[in-house]
Amino acid sequence: MIHKFIQYLHISYLTKQRGVFVELKKEKGKFIKLHPAQILVIGFAVLIFLGTLLLMLPISTYEEGKGLHFVDALFEATSAVCVTGLAVVDTGTTFTIFGQLVMLFLVQIGGWGFMTIGIFMFIILGKKIGLKERLLLQDSLNLFTLSGVVKLVSRIIFITLIVEITGALILAIRWSFEMAWTKALYYGFFHSISAFNNAGFGLEPDNLSKWVGDPTVNLAITSLFIIGGIGFTVILDVWQKKSLRKLSLHSKVALLMTLILNVVGTIIILISEFHNAATIGNLSWNDKFWASYFQGVVPRTAGFNTIDIGHMTLSSQVFTMALMFIGASSGSTGGGIKVTTFAIIIFAFWTVLTNRSDVNIFKRRISWNLVNKSLSIGVSAIIFIFTIFFLLTYTEDMPMNKLLFETISAFGTVGLSTGITGDLSPYGKLLITLMMFIGRLGPLTMAFALMSKRHKARLRYAEEKILIG
Image (cartoon, rainbow, N blue to C red; front, side, top):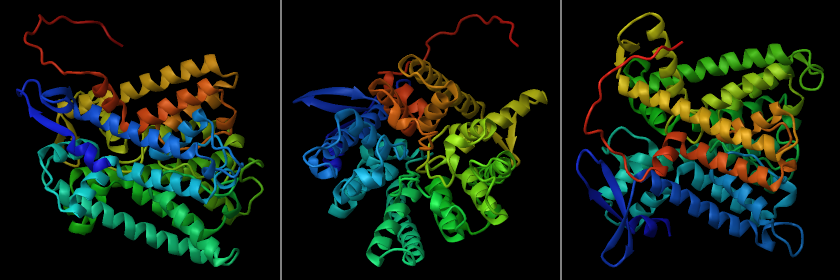
């Protein structure tokens, strides 16, 4: 179905000034011009719609004769496809095995992206992959060039399966000591797929809280979502070059920023929550470390939790919101503005402060065009977050910090919550659903999708200065 949707597209090279657009066949001989970003929006929307219909089926829930209501089903499907993890119902007790497998399928497709699945189907069926498919895949995976995109898809699928199976077996062996083998194996695969795709859905009502001090569970889950959040291009770069010095600038920045944020996150959570009896205050030193480590690295990517987020100190929640806003790495299963975008903004800020002419990272110059795009992503993200947060203050009678936390979590496709998700009004659920959708596709992609054409200015006006600061 997905590959048929891709085949339905027709690529049209317009002038260089107008860029490359995709044409969707409307009637015989007639086409609707669409930007690749608009195709991605339509593709994800179709997946969410199909997932919503499946979750509304009576077979999907334990309540006899009833599936989820439309708004709840839409919310859950969007959260799964956008690999967020926010939930208005408890996954383990609400959904049947069929419903859970539907959620898992949506998570896997959402993590890969519908274009990756479409190209993979082309490869299996032996069909020729043309320029239109390559262009859409390039836009979907946020790649620099068209070179090697088809080979990249095969490697993405291969890496995903190897990592997920390995993680599933490790978790299954650990959980087999406290539950039946069949259940342990199912738990292992469910949480492994959920973790690698940075979704954060769990089968226990308290997520992973009962294993707060368990080294195996902590390391297995965090390793899965860190690998998934680092980005497929970085993983392949490390695999092929096997030397930090030979890595691309993108890989170096992504790895360094990930390491810094993970270490700083762990330390901040440990300090902020050390005496908080509602979270880690009453735990042993060993359990405090594992809880701080887990909650310090999880906010940028996945929505798992081993402590009660709603009872964290306000300082911890604010810091967590900052990590969720930054997000994971480009080309990964995570959301946010991305660590590389954040790094470029920080280095650009430092360049302005030091009155230098170029933005330099690791003895390499970053173009101001890339800096401007990074700033645009950051600004558009703030605008989208503020807009949804502002509307939530109208629809919901809840504390501002909890509404803002929920909004940023949805934007970053993280899935952490202070516990208000299920209590949101139908309007609130729809707003958070929209925020998850925007967060998965990226604020700049959404902005491009809303524009039918991008025009290049044919004249330049006289320059004049405005006082700033």
